[in-house]
Each structure stands twice: as C-alpha cells, then as structure tokens.
View 1 (cartoon, rainbow, N blue to C red):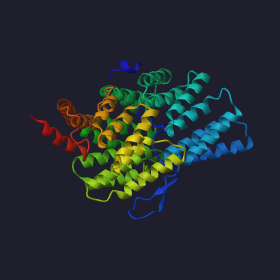
View 2 (view 1 turned 45 degrees about the vertical axis):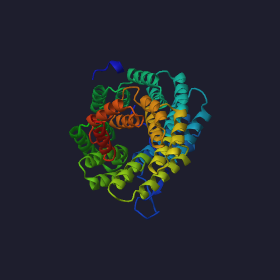
View 3 (view 1 turned 60 degrees about the horizontal axis):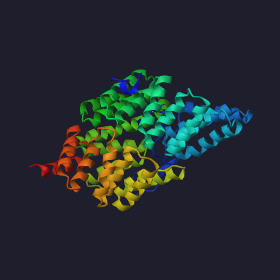
Length: 441
C-alpha cells in the first residue's frame, strides 16, 4: 500500500503525546483544593509490572525485562494520563541500556516513545533513529519516528516513516498513523477510509473505541454531525460495555468521545449538557486543552471559569514537573487568561523547537490578540500550508486577514470556516458570522 496513492499522525492508541499530571490533581468542585486519585491501571498491567519486578529481583541483568518494565510504566502513565510514571519508565529503560549498551532496540524505542510523551520530539527522533540502526525492520521504531517528525513539522519525513511502517507491519497502528498523515494533507476522504480499515482490524475494546473517536473527529471537522453522533454512540457503547479492567484501558478514548459529544450538545445550544459531558472528560483525563474548552463553555454559560482555569494551570505545572515541555499549552493558558503578549513569547519558543501546523496556528492567533496582525499572517498561512481542512484554522485566517485590511481573503476564509462546519465553536462561529456579514457588499 502506498500511503498517498491510497484512494480511500493523530497517533495510534499506544501513542503518548497527551498533556497530563502526576497522580493527583485538584478536584473540580468549585472552591475546594482537595485531591482525587486518577483511574488505576488495569489489573493485568499491574500483574505484568509485578512479574517484571519479581523477575528482576532474581535476574537483575535481564535487559529485556528492564525494557519491558519501562514500557509497562509508560503504558501505565497513558492509561491514567499520569506522568508521575515517566521517571519510573525512564529509570527502567536506562537500566536496560546500562546492562546492554549496544544492540538494545527495545530500550531505545521505549526512550523515544517516552520523549514523545514529554514533548521532546527532537529527542524522540534521535532515539528512534538509533533504534533503527540496530533493527532497520522495527515497525515500532518507525512509528515513534513518524510521530516525532510530524510534531517537528517535517511532513515529508513523517510520511516516509509512516509508509515504511505500513510496508513492514500493516495493521491498526500503521493505519491510524497513515490516516492522520492524510488528514494533515487535507485528504479527508482517504483519511476516513484508512481509519475505517483500522476499525476493521481492531479487536480490543480500547482500539475499537479509539477508531470510533477519530472517525467522529473527522466527521465533526466536516460539519457532519449525524456521522459524528453515530461514531460517538458506537464508541461509547463499546467502552461502556466492557469489563472494569478493560474499561480502564479505554479511558482515554472514552474521554475523547465525551468531548466530541460535548461539542455536539453545544452545537444545538444545550450548554448544560455539554458541560456535563466535559465533566466526564475531566474526571478521566484533565488535560490543559480540555479544561480550557470547559472554561470557554462556562464563560459562555455565564458561569465562573476560574476553577477550570486553575486546574488547567495545575495540570500544566504538574506535567512539566515530570519532565515535560509544553510552551504551546502555556501559550493557550496565557491567551485564556488575557495575557496575549506572554502567549506570543511562549508560542514563539515552541515554534523555535518545532514548526508544526498547530504551533503556527496558535502563534498567529496570539499575535493577532497582541495587536500584531501583520506578523500573524505568515504564520497562519504556514499553518494551512499542507492543505489541512479545518474550520477553526480558516476562521483564524479570516480574522487575521480582516485585521490586515484584506477583505477578499477574509471573506473567502470565513465562508470556508462556516461552510466546513457552521457550528465549529459556540464562541467563535457567531463571531465569524457577524464578521462575514460585515463584509457583504
């Protein structure tokens, strides 16, 4: 299968790019500062970790088990969105390398996945390349490399890595990465078809829910609310119907599905239902982006967004305390709390590390909010350079063009945003409609 000839990278379920926190975060109840535990790891995963540790007590020189233990800790961090396990994962993986310094592909690949989780994408690329020197046929290492190249803003290299992964091991992980790569290039129909192929190969409930989540997201991006609702319902039915231990594994996908359900509810004006949906997301994965979305809805509903903003700040601080780097999340926080000049500085820091479309988009929007629309224009163009179809991006492009006095481009981009998804945001879509109306002859 040739990826960009496929007529038919959000990363696969095993990918670890999400923002998170250590084992406890402030509870969402307004006015409180108590803490709640994150969801526990699965019984099976805990049993595996215990078995690995017991094996290492008796055979401390078993480098393969050290690598497996590191990968298990990384999986534990993913399940609970809990970077407190990052240092444990790193310690086990580096111990594996200490015991076996050369020819240790599993430890190098694991360190690459850990670096991706911490948003050290340059480090992830380096580790993946080192692993591929040891084993040029490692599909897992190519997956780590593809994720890193994508986030670094190297689209040709990312596509090449995904293609190599598809050639070596066609299946769920390579299909989902291929779908994301196609989506980034604006090839939505093909992205959907490849994600549907991934769904056909999925057997575990977590993987089925994950595929439905991303099919729902692709439908939502095109304003197809009927298909979005169908995949959300199917995904939630899959995850809610599993045994308790498996349900814990599906927590991340379930959170994403509830987030999409919140957008569907907000699109029909039911803000209370949308906020209830987002509470379910926050209970599973209280990440910066979800909490900022919650704060925006609270503000729109006339309620105090401060508790959500405080929790978003805590989530960011706890993520960085565990070795993560996320100036993009910090920039979004700065914008949400009316600090556009600081947002510009933070987003620019992130841009110097990686020239990914999402970074260019947030940097351009921060520059506009800081009163620097002329500087924003090159970055918003860069954000859409690959052809990605996205209503929010088109809205940003239109508003930046309007601020620069380019009425023709503003009209085209605002029309595009509203034609793609007229309900793309309960906050921004009405602004887009008013701005477009002001441009009518």
